[in-house]
Image (cartoon, rainbow over all chains, first blue to last red):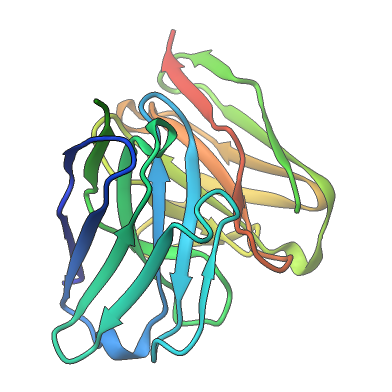
Length: 120
Length: 109
């Protein structure tokens, strides 16, 4: 069965960096686009970034552009999100999510999320 | 960017009743590229509906989606205890960014 397991969250000071990872299993990872979506405590869902199946195309939300890099390693079935210059407003649960088989941007499987808290 | 507005913010109903959730877009969502997700406390969202009206795998037929253009509806015909959760709509018609509605909380009356 499809599994997505995020890791790397924690408490980090403002201005510092953090790298999140998502381990994928149960499907052919290299054939699916992948996303990061976040959810601030008690708030709604916010899309963060997407990477194409081959890693050649990457897009970001304006709120994180220039501070975040999405990447993937298809040989290890992993998805990463490198976050720098972190701000209090980046505090959220970060989910990795699989894009559907179609080329349309919606999500058919989600991980359980990893919490990032930006605080001094 | 397409802005999605969901209503009501909170819906209080009893098991067995019918739930109607609304999602309105700031501009037309072409080809009905709209999805609905369910999220329970402490859990990840789950895909319910895509293409405005197609049920995702394993979703019971008491859950249905409808609508086109700027107005979309998620209907749960007979509420079961497990249906009480937060529901989000998401559009994927326009170019990025992907946007979500702010959510509707469906609570037990």
